[in-house]
Length: 208
Image: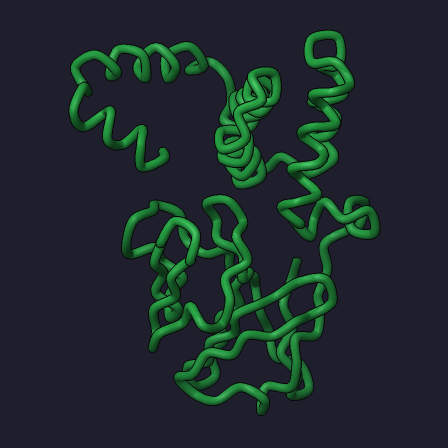
């Protein structure tokens, strides 16, 4: 939730609690992906940008593909109308999520070369570009962690300057992460997106 909603829940949880309970109970017979796709549509209908971004990310985390999200919006055309669908598409383009890029939206997951293993110093973090992605790479001996540079909250692209020691703080809403594990340790509740890795012929590969 936003800071404003957290504030209202804190000071008037007795009243707002009933509303949030209703929202939770209303979708309890739906699987999480479907529930969040419906929430995406509802936020586009009300043109609530923050809520749209929030539920867009939730839908992706629950396994919805970019094409499923686009199809959900197009299927809701009779209710939304073209103007609101275009409004949503403009926000998606502004968020610049790699999976939504036209050249990636139909691509199949696979292994990508991140760099030579020797390029990464033990117990240090490096921010790099790899094809259409920006990544943080942390090395601990022969173990490598490769993270998407985008905050899981609203996909803010976190710069290298946001890294202090082993702590990475998103400049937009101040979610703080432990780069050694990817865990969110302050403000938020979602970890950094981590990619599966392997070493092959001295090269570090990541799967997405």
